[in-house]
Length: 171
View 1 (cartoon, rainbow, N blue to C red):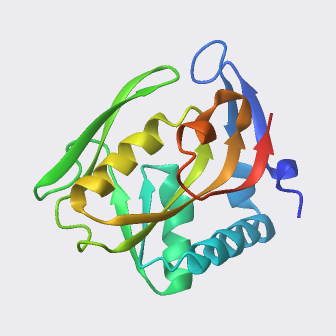
View 2 (cartoon, rainbow, N blue to C red; view 1 turned 60 degrees about the vertical axis):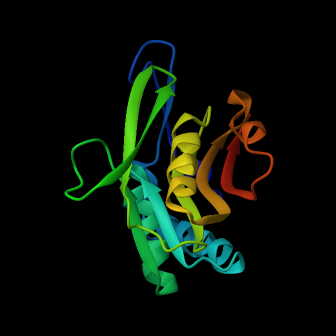
View 3 (cartoon, rainbow, N blue to C red; view 1 turned 90 degrees about the vertical axis):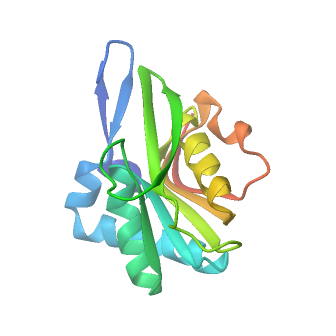
């Protein structure tokens, strides 16, 4: 299935000079959304995932149904002050600013096999922060899955030691 048909280009969002890839038409299509979840779930299953983690907020759209499909748990990586118990925190840079992300300190068992699922890989700032959180928690990253990969921004090259899977690639 050609998922590019379901991904809209939005120029100058959220700031001038950024070309935003809008996945909302994809999740609005039952057929395209189902295909995306099936393919990401096949990848996570092939990696032996015991948990799925997804960063707020679009990682929730894809990570939760993948975890459900596999019958395993989902860990939300949230923005600050959204989680009620002790957390690990990581700051990171975005293409257009800075942010932080957190997980509960008891989110993973030591050595647990984790697959990260998110909507888009660009520069890898969010991904780097999520990786650091998982490592702090003592879990093992066995794979990383994306719906969209923006190859020209170099995200994949930053994480060459990880198995990265993406459904759609833009140069």
